[in-house]
Structure formats: C-alpha cells, structure tokens
Image (cartoon, rainbow, N blue to C red; front, side, top):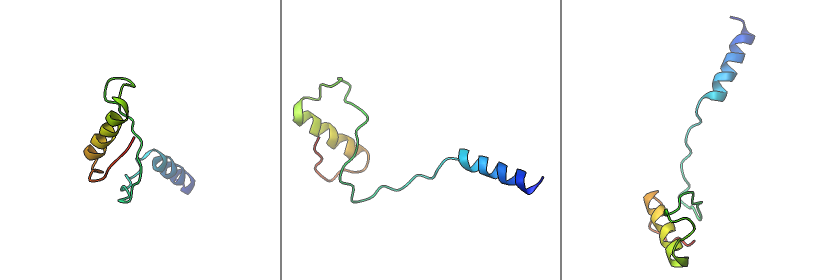
Length: 69
C-alpha cells in the first residue's frame, strides 16, 4: 500500500468517524427547546411555557435555576 493510499484511507475514516461529545458549560445562560409538551403551540400561556422550560432543564441536568420562556 502506498503512502498516498494510506493517507486517503485515513482521511476518509477520519471524516466518517463520530465526533466526541463536548461537555456542557456550567455557566449556560440559555438553551433551545426542540420538544413540545404534546399540545402543539398550546403551552398554557407564559406560565405554562416557563414551566415547560423548567421541566426540560431539570430533565437535562440544568435545573437549580429559574428558566423563562
């Protein structure tokens, strides 16, 4: 196997291998919500939206803070 073939195989394998997960910053100040409560856009007003954000934050390990929608 030539050096060029080896380099090509190495580059292809490097591109398709999964990237390592990055640790979350403990100073996180916001997050994006990608999962609704199951009622479409009916979050129950701002109180319901805040509660939903708090629940998602708690479930993801980012609880202990007040999260607002």
